[in-house]
Amino acid sequence: MLSPRLNISLNTSRPTAILDGHLDSAYEELTVPGIPGAEHAISSQGAASATGKMQKHNQKEHLYKLLVIGDLGVGKTSIIKRYVHQNFSPHYRATIGVDFALKVLSWDAETVVRLQLWDIAGQERFGNMTRVYYREAMGAFIVFDVTRPATFEAVTKWKEDLDSKLVLPNGKPVPTVLLANKCDQGIDVLMNNGIKMDQFCKENGFVGWFETSAKENININEASRCLVKHIIATESDPVQPIETDIIKPHLNSGKIVSCSACFKS
Image 1 (spheres, rainbow, N blue to C red):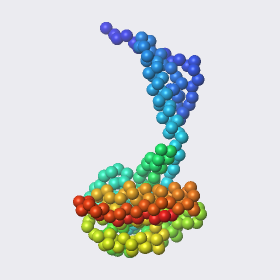
Image 2 (cartoon, rainbow, N blue to C red):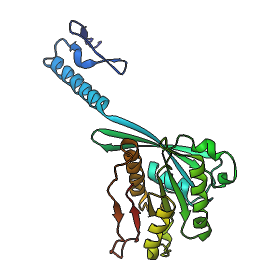
Image 3 (cartoon, rainbow, N blue to C red):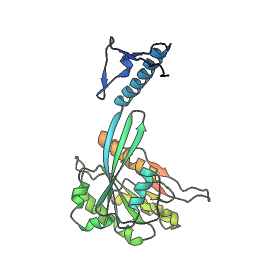
Image 4 (tube, rainbow, N blue to C red):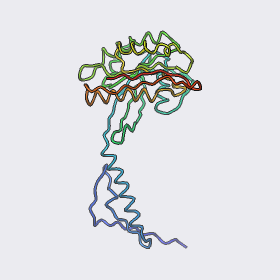
């Protein structure tokens, strides 16, 4: 025996609205014969859906292109994978040319920030393509490996290359954060020279520096927030200084100790 068919009729006597190119169900009434209260329930669901859409439409959205640069093998790709996908792989595979990733941040109740991360191969500094890769970027991370001093020595060359090829519309360098990566490997040279690192960064135009570890997920989010905060401050009011974020070394011996600073703009 066949089951009785459920007849659903659309009442279009009330006005409709278009949101995102779709019919707004908040202004539709679905009449379901034989099911008391169904009309009210369906209309309420539609109203809730429309309210969510309206709140979403009231949010401000920012799209920022961020560069992740530094010498070969310093952990740029691992940092991005940790930040975007929350995973880490010990297997190394060199980036060829450039790779991309997207991270969406709910910055506050009124703001959504979309970050387009450009993972640029370490050997690209020696080529002419970096000018193309850098174009229209709003900020950058320069990464070095704390276990390989030569990669730190290359930081100033990366910064000079960046500043010579990319400036903000006001003529200033783009905000750049220095990442001292692989701090989980027990190298405490930087930690014992935090003041010198602060001085180095200020002298070379970095807005902050962070000891990071993609493996242990140390300071990745904090470094990103520092950079985005500087970008937003520069974009909204270039002369307004932002508050300083300083991450103190943890005294808990059970955790890996890290030092960092996010300077005023």
